[in-house]
Length: 554
Ligand code: ATP
Ligand code: MG
Image 1 (cartoon, rainbow, N blue to C red):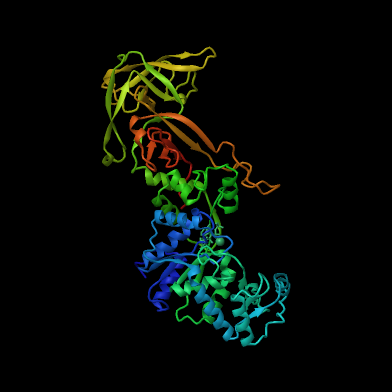
Image 2: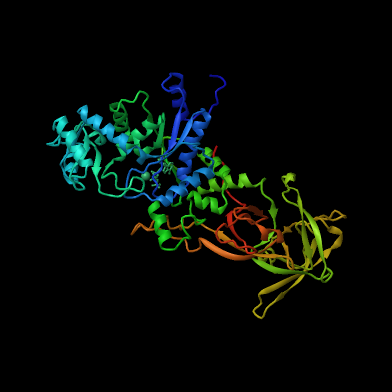
């Protein structure tokens, strides 16, 4: 095909073929999380992949909670997961499903299998089943109960449902092949007895279907065509196919595996994050140092940036790990033209303009984003006393230093040229204030005589400055030491992962709304924290700094 886009991924190729051959008329995908934790960036990949394919092929995307396991699920997570998916922009329309709503239909399929002689009730204990299962090199042994009559199996399965057995006393197994080279096909357990209350069905059931039986049925009941999952399920595919075939669906779904998204040196495992939350090391599941979707949102990432990231990662069949810097690249790209560039001083020192009139405040015009005129301009106060960054002044600088030191002229961004004339110190010799004079002819930042300056520094006028809390982040784990402690498997935490400073900011920033984000010139992109900001006392999280050595992969 001459005009076909060159870069279709392998899943698109499968779909194209299925549609061309008439295997399916339209496609249906789904996202099937277990409601047992918050979603993370890896899930975002799965969500956007499934939703993106449905949209691309004019098909359907279903949202389904895989809540067949009564031990782990929590209703609290259902809400957070839906919120995250909505925020990412994936739309399930009116198709929100719970696998537990299919328990009755799953039971019927199990009965059907028994009637076909394809399932049997077993009395072996879990340990015995494991023993009988054989190894990768040796075939398994058939259960002594494998050849029960269909009638007996039907009765026993009914009894299982009716609560006549204790947990573990009986299971229902598929009757497939104890000699199969694929261990998953050696008469896998498909139902177990568990006297447990389920968050949705309460105490209605005391038998629960196993994942490998339930999942293909959920897909099939919903008319899912392409059941996309991650690579660890590859060996389960023959069982998936067996289930949908034996259940005799006319258009059975097919399972397709792709590689999980891993981020180098980033912790995504639920177990670890739970521990960080419980020990109070992070401020909940959405602490901005984490990569749960809620945390990324709180930190100031946008759905667009995550989509861009997922697109750049691509879809593949082999596991690999992506650098966090790529995610940072995406958010910078997304925000750089969209957000105003304001001035904030994070490590302030006073700058006094000795020849500027005492008590005078003038308003200067500054573009909101030099690269995007559409964002307009603003008025900023200027006066005799300003704050500048401590690192923008040095008493005795190295050769290449382009900022302020005694005797040099620099530009105050959007304002005037100033010449440093001296500085004050305290008893210990620390610089407490810097002095300069300004050239009134250079208003706006250029000199009529054409003279140039080497450096431009940002500032905030002291009398009108707002005071804001700013949080600066590093990786929560110590990359030098490696993520995991070699001895006990715990995380090597970075003690400097959070630094909190009080910054002086342009007055307008004091009105920032939750989740509103900005560029603070030279310091990075920042987002107003929804949790900790108070009226008149905003808290800004640094999303990302401006500099990076990251280059897009070719
Ligand atoms: P985790 O253990 O990392 O929290 P999970 O696999 O237990 O993840 P599920 O709720 O079972 O979480 O996953 C829902 C869907 O998200 C599954 O289809 C799963 O394959 C997919 N998924 C999970 N982690 C990743 C990842 N890192 N990259 C891509 N897809 C993922
Ligand atoms: Mg899981």
